[in-house]
Image (cartoon, rainbow, N blue to C red):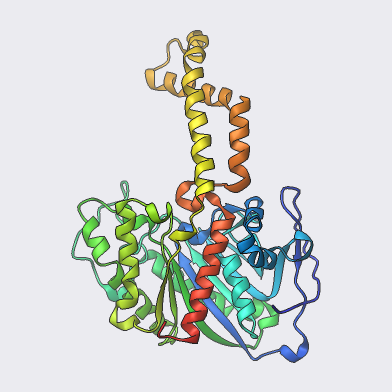
Length: 396
């Protein structure tokens, strides 16, 4: 790993370790180029894990090396001054040296970019720039649909009362990459006047494909790989990078025993490297085996405790609220009782214990890997390893 001089990082929080910078590259290591990686996709590329869950990664001896890279000395989260990030997630822009804080929830949150960037920083002598542009709840068949894919052969139903904007996220991604490259020297003075080498694209998406309207679901699965091949083709042409390496992260939610819908999506993702235009330059990276069942169990336990307490408390609370509910519509009455019951159950010791057990290891919804920083970090590492293999040997 490259070493650097200690930098003061002003953001501190009592709920997780202090951030510290890693040492500065010696002058002899200065290079003329910067390796640039584009990271895109939907909410799991955005990243929804609170950094308080990251210590769980270090509890497993198998992952001690990665945890130590992320934590730095003294159990402080590392700041890489050889890896930079320009991030737009859900239209929230943040940039700086790579550390925690580039996930969807702000400075205490991470996604796969943290471990991915640290591993890429270790791989290259050149500085690394990550351009992360991701938006939650977006699909490839419409939102990210690239120009060369053309119009679909089926009608895409409106979202709510609004017609869909075909290709909106593709256009946003292109604009973000151009902006980040144009402003690189201004935003990152250490990278000023360096030659840009567009070194790779990392794609982590797929959830919304599984929830397409039932009238088009089969077509959405069937064209996923070809749509993505068009996506890469258009990006390569846009940025004059005809051999841009591409890594596709498997949607690993719910692990290897996921439901049929998820398995179909994974099969579509696995078919991407077989597309003629991507043979030898794209790699599908499996992540389902990184699912942490203990986090899932902790979540299920909390929800079971919540359900049982709700059933126990609701009748009595409804009885106590009779006078308050009088005259209200049925729907309003149910909402009032539900809110009061949830408030009451959160004060019970058994719920407090179950909540505490889950929050030690998880911080968000199931579809976001339960907000587990361990899972996001292992996924980021797997994506980095895949990129390293692809660059070293395209036949991989």
